[in-house]
Image 1 (cartoon, helix red, strand yellow):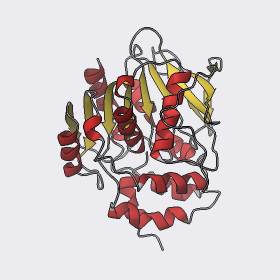
Image 2 (spheres, one colour):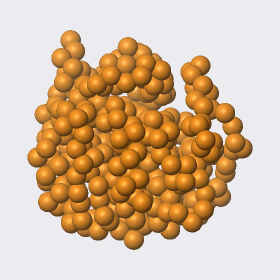
Image 3 (tube, helix red, strand yellow):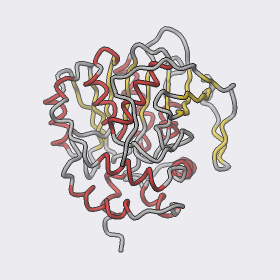
Image 4 (cartoon, one colour):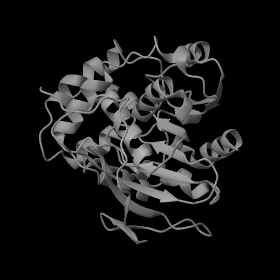
Length: 313
């Protein structure tokens, strides 16, 4: 996810009926996988990491009616690691981390509904909706248990899922997270700007929205902005509205999975007190701090990968 929670300060200064299956519902849907292929995006060719298995790509229709696009790498008996990207990002937001991860790590990285190459329905973009998709996706892929890695919005999806379904989560990694977004002034100030967005989203807006606290490779940021441009205005609005309502304080004690918090000390919205609150509420949790901003996995992908491998084993 963007430095929504760093760049919102910049953005703030700029002059229904729902259908969705219950989050407790399960599905058994045929797994549709595409053949191995080279992935091309916005004239930027993404090559697999040197010496690593190529990613493969598939699309799975869920019982919710949404078809989810995903990338995966690795097979075998190791516990799969499901990576959950942030707001207006895609699975590709973890690409720098994937390059640094051992190829033996079994990676599954979906595009959330409304994002990347997944379906973009008109409705249903609350954190609970995203968590419901995760449940249906794991059932469709016949994953009894997985480790979860979530960044920002993805971390709130992971929190909710781990609290609701503790037997489905092995280990939990929350990157740039907090117990609650409700009442966060920086988010409430930018919400009118998000609510006013119309298609097509200006590329300049997307680029400024995704600006990082520290430099990252130009090609990587061009790819990030291209992925952001795939998200239509109605998803920007609906997902943001869902985020500002998140308050997981009451459910954090239900998380039983060993949990690693990764936090950048330059994150302007998710603060050290937020991390201390998470540590206090999640029983088996620990914190690793980075000299980085909200998108620390973009700024320090190798260090992020090292922390994941040490924790996930």
